[in-house]
Image (cartoon, rainbow, N blue to C red; front, side, top):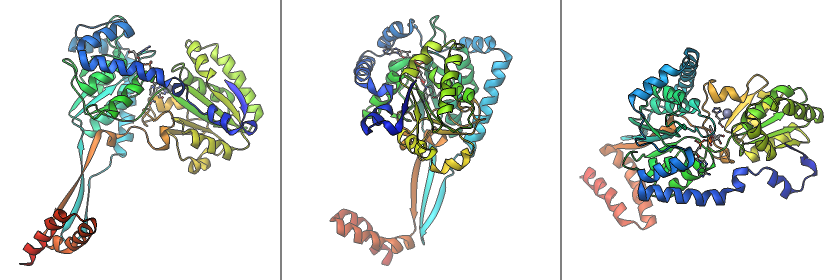
Length: 433
Ligand SMILES: NC(=O)c1ccc[n+]([C@@H]2O[C@H](COP(=O)([O-])OP(=O)(O)OC[C@H]3O[C@@H](n4cnc5c(N)ncnc54)[C@H](O)[C@@H]3O)[C@@H](O)[C@H]2O)c1
Ligand SMILES: N[C@H](CO)Cc1c[nH]c[nH+]1
Ligand SMILES: [Zn+2]
């Protein structure tokens, strides 16, 4: 992790420091992904088999997980793991249920009723990563809100293991959410299959879920294509930014940084502090904790494009954080709650010393599918509304057209749109006669 003093950097170097590693390699990734998508569109299942063989070491004859594989998966899990998945699912459901928006209706004038009704998106495609680590928690983060939204048709893709089976905990978590249409397909090819459809995989209206740089780029490309599919958000390589003051626990801070660094070599973790001793102590902790981690190599590579930044003040740290717009923001501050109003861009915020980011990943109840690469400046994390379409409705009585028709006539005249004017004027005449 490079150590720098923000106050000594010119503005260009400051900007470079806040760049994501995935942004640096994006043009190569984009062309690789474009050709994968093209081949899936042209050759469907046979392209999926070729990419499965090349990238996952397995090309299933049948991509769909059958009922026997679901049953074996469930039986193979420990009682403790099943209970943890069940417990997490319940807490995620409780938080997401509380955040569901209700339909509403307003009489905007006498005889004019405007409403907003909510409908579930009819067919949604979920992507659960399993490249370097299978993420059953992601199946919950996607499946729970999709069910609460009432989506009738839920498709899930996840990369197969080398033996051709899907990760059993991912299958259990999917089934726990009522999802049984699971396909063993990973990467950009899975996104292409769900966006355009193949003989095996149904075409979906909207795609959800995190993934590596290939998955995230594939989602971006299918979302740009009018024949493709909508997407939730860019939810790429994991990130965390920690703002720590003099009193923060260096072991906790280092553990939180490493918990995101271990996701992938393209993850990025940032530490900002106004205290040199804290920065020194975290650096020592990183070195000693790294040695204990099975995924130390991955974490070490992520740390190479990460920074520990000495700032003038916590206010300056908050300003830098808002500019960076991290997926996760940990406020390891003595009065973390007091800093919250200054946070304007972050996917999910963790207040104080006792809220490790890993709790949000698994079971606090918030969603861990969050915007990365700075998208937290304009987008929030996944929620039930992400799986719904909001349809507005208006119902107008004769007295309603009398009340608001003249307003529409005036505006139509100003725009020179006579057919619009006529549509209203005819009704005004009919009501008057
Ligand atoms: N932002 C979020 O909300 C969030 C949540 C969870 C996980 N994540 C991120 O998701 C990512 C998961 O990545 P992963 O790799 O473990 O799993 P993954 O399932 O996203 O990717 C694995 C797939 O990548 C494809 N692939 C691998 N190498 C390739 C290559 N050279 N060319 C083309 N395709 C290739 C393969 O098809 C493989 O099946 C991590 O970066 C993690 O940080 C983000
Ligand atoms: N931290 C990831 C989101 O960036 C989510 C996750 C799943 N499992 C562990 N972590
Ligand atoms: Zn994580």
